[in-house]
Image (cartoon, rainbow, N blue to C red):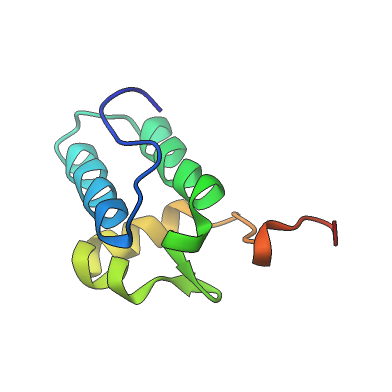
Length: 91
């Protein structure tokens, strides 16, 4: 993921800020398609309690990052399987 983004933000607002920065960097072509996907999947895997609310993005994250970035994040998360409670395969 590199050193440009905080790997473990401690609040929803901090996570949203990191996602907003990553999306802006992607739009400015400072990071590649693979890098933005890696960043978003990292947060989805490592910080699901901050990123998601039930089966969709946390409303606070969505409000902070805005509609266009929400659309980008949702596209990047296509194929990502979110598991509730961090459990996979019932374990």
